[in-house]
Image (tube, rainbow, N blue to C red; front, side, top):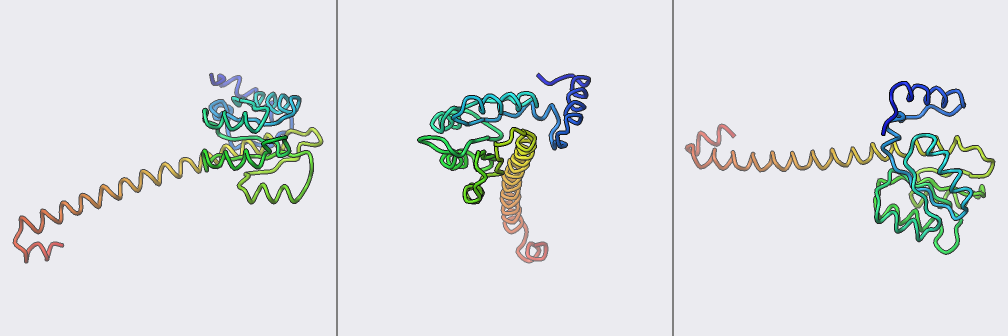
Length: 196
């Protein structure tokens, strides 16, 4: 349920007062988005979940890569926030699976290490953003989620419009073929050639 205008204004004012970056999404737009948070550390999962819920996102959590796989198969998400360093199924595997399930799904990877090699690998494998989870400041993560969801929505809208445009072009080509057939089969040949 979306907050009323007064509640929305208060929430947006609190975000500005808290020094959070301006979001490309309104409170209402966040209320419609589902985020999957994947981290093997319960405390971090909870902190990230609570911060996102506080920003009006619908949040599901997964405690392992395998759990994330199951949720990605059974649900629709607008973004994934995933720890890179997990036992058994790491964040790189989750990133690849998320992209297999939905190539437009943005994945934000988290790591406690500022390892440049991991950052570059994650970006090469399709991560939308990389956020260092050390330090306790969640503002970069919250801003990355907002940007990721806005980006994913634009990608999906673009794909939808491309499909719609392709269908229209095919329809117009079929209509042109029918009109050409009528033109050449109903009118005398010389007149039809001049009209074409």
